[in-house]
Length: 132
Length: 94
Image 1 (cartoon, rainbow over the protein chains, first blue to last red):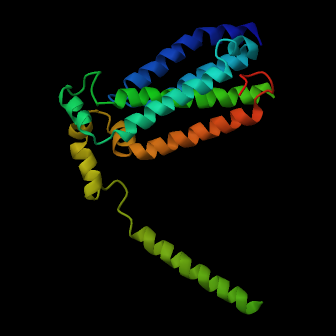
Image 2: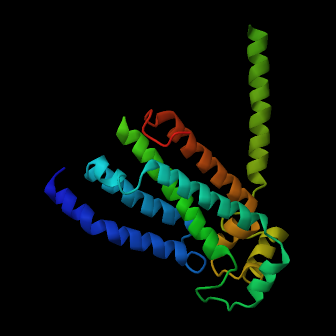
Image 3: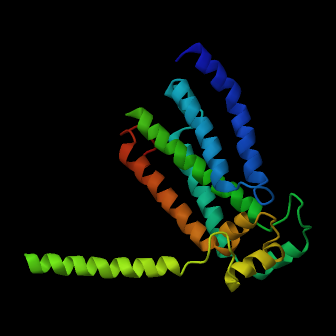
């Protein structure tokens, strides 16, 4: 790839990671949430895969690691959503103040787990397409 | 041949009539009808879920099982692509 594209991608990558993390963590307070955050971070990693050679990125984040992350975050999602309506969730809610960062019960953690699911899906697809 | 064509056109006219009837029954653009589920989400959302973003509250809390299904679809799609396209003899031994 061109040196110009490589430089811009190197500058943009941490900013995109930061934006995605902000969208996910602040998702219960401002517009956003797990799905858009995963799309942003997944696009950042896809950009690095396309701009640099695929091997440079893949030895840091292998496909097997992606599947592991995806499985663990899926398990977290299942446990959290299945516990919906249980008593301890309402007790957790009553100890929190509205509009603070740690409010919304499990919504923060659900957003982060959903973000991991979307990231791993996008990156798995990009690896599969680039490899062929 | 001619009879079947007429029958088809008649059926089409009936379906189109029902569609027009359905469209005229929609609420006006921009108006809010007081359906009680929507009203419940808007009024009780902050107290029930504690999250100020009502869209996030609905997606991850009120309709959590729906979101769980969505994530399952995502998981199955990515896992299927991974299993089809992975290189032989390069990953972990199963």
